[in-house]
Image 1 (spheres, rainbow, N blue to C red):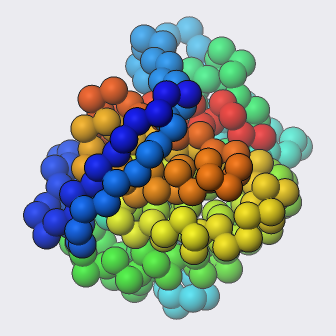
Image 2 (image 1 turned 90 degrees about the horizontal axis):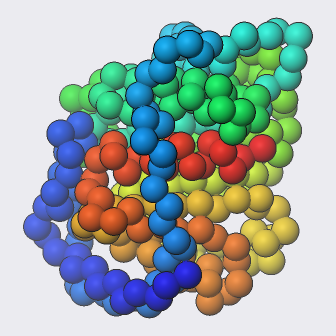
Length: 291
């Protein structure tokens, strides 16, 4: 690992973002961190391109009743090639950003089905389904909410754990223990994944954050019990673009983990910005490491 000095200028100015995700404001003063980034290894060419001659999975839109929100909500589910109801599958819950919804990964450039199809064809992943929910736990969960929907993102854990996970386990052939559940997400969803995953280690054993946004809790709040995380978490994995102004959010957690000897991977994508170039790379690598 190489050690770098990260300076985060947290001002009222807006950080640049990609076309799908709106600019995300950051607040406060200047903060500095010594960070040991893990080695970046480029994904193989074509990892996110549709291939001929391989089997393909399917994406299914589901509706489930949400007890915490009080409405019927939607999520997309990727089922792998030859999904078999007589087998058991692990589950990756894959979250979107503040500008997206249950369709962001699928329609805005994330191509999770293509990435997963290729990984299956190359025998690089374990059997799993991928659930892509709407992370706004509000009656109006449309994309139009913008920053106004930020509180609903913070409440999503109640819907996720209380309603969505039970629905998935009732309606799909999946394992029901934490060792077969993972959570990861991009931007706002990356912050949710770190907050909810580390905050509910009895539910999730694998946690990933891709370009995690300022909703990410400070490291000391995420990991109040260092020994518990060492014992119960099987994977804590992060990536962020080197040119992304939000890199501090992940760096502060990595720095804390290193100081406390908590296993944690943090990759700086060279010159990467706040976009699906980085997030697709995150999914490609994270999916291979879980289960």
